[in-house]
Length: 139
Image 1 (cartoon, rainbow, N blue to C red):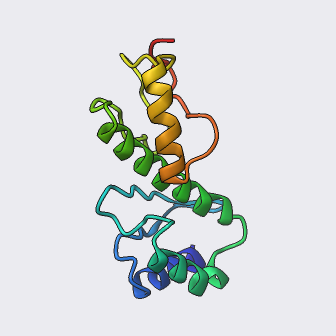
Image 2 (tube, rainbow, N blue to C red):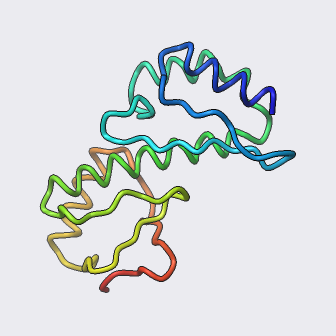
Image 3 (cartoon, one colour):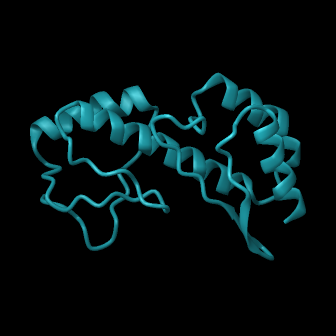
């Protein structure tokens, strides 16, 4: 935990003021990062990339996956913001696990697929959209 806390402090010392302290205990330590539109947690931000590079030696073994997860959630948040600006104002932000609640959204609609292709390219997001269990949305 001390090493994960040192990593968080390092990220903040390098200008990523939104970077959270770790939570959990034992082998289950994680960072709960929720980067919104004005967050400095955007993994494509040059300052974020520089901080990550400067602090990587402090990242505890096994934490790389959690760090990548925080990056994935930041990409998903950027994707959601883009989708809202491309005709889907009801498009949700991802939950804490990076899944979306698509209740009431027809993901098979051609307009949705077109907006999704545009926003995936703009956000750096790749891969299938993780769906929050029980909210599959219209198919």
